[in-house]
Length: 337
Image (cartoon, rainbow, N blue to C red; front, side, top):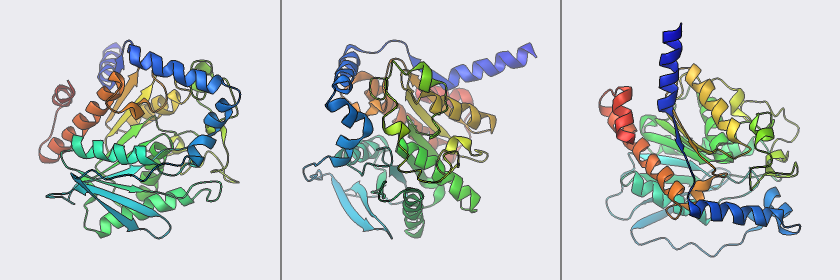
């Protein structure tokens, strides 16, 4: 028994990667976020997502190296970002944006699409602007995510060459979509990229308490997006299509999960990783010390965010190589080194 436990611990140690100390840049950003949320006028609007929802942005200008195609799905619009020259529809990321199920897509996710394209060596990125609450509560977002997946299949994409990526609510939606696909006998995608996924809308995880005073974005209040019931409506919040943490992950594809150590949503990721591993899923959980919710928004400007995006690129390369040949755990770890 001692030997088995030791082996399990060693395996988990390889799965979990922690940055030991955050950078000065990250500390500055963390302090700015905390100061903004502490402001009596600005803070509640930021934490409730009102600013995010009402954000008016300039029209996005597509860089000349890309081509953007707008697609009409049954109930929403979507955007397909591909290389302007020699696009390859054979490999694609289905990106599901965050925003607490109350915020629509914004330009940041078009920048994310560009990063995914670069890190994935020209991979196409399909991003639906799915319907959001309160006008469109559950199951609108899930219906639109499924419509986007079905569109890719109808366009000739093979599930084994589709990766679903999402941050925050988009990460939870990615998992809910996979649960829906499995329940309806539809082949699952090749992999999942989950950035601070919101997997437990019951807010029942331990980090909702232990990180209550540490989280610079959602901390020190119960009146924030993570307690918003607009998307849930009259449904049971423990419904796995709403809170995928309560679903079964048997048969799921490999997952890359990234999360910050001071997030109130930390346990949404750690509990997900544990449950998925127990179901036999290959999981790479990366906890970034002292980092906040979806710190990947810093893209290549914060050291931790840059490292996280580099890890995304390595994960995509692992999936590429795994498609052509079996890889040992050590070989996969070497590719992440």
